[in-house]
Length: 105
Image (cartoon, helix red, strand yellow):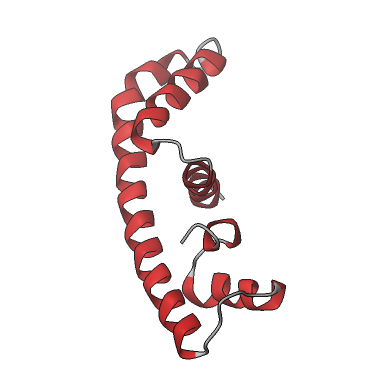
């Protein structure tokens, strides 16, 4: 579930054209503010959390790049300029390119 939330965060950032590496520390700071009273030790994991999220972003970006490349080849092979709902879902499932990012790429 956490991985899915992280990927959804990355997808939303890309869709909104936000710099993931700049906004992630801000998000971590906000989470720390919210939970600091309940978990005082959370402050010590800030750097480690950023490193983990940065690594996830690298992996996510590599997967997305491969998926976009495969999606473009599929669209070209099938002479498709626009896709309907079913084709978008197929591309999301087959190539891992989230629906809301397909139009961007």
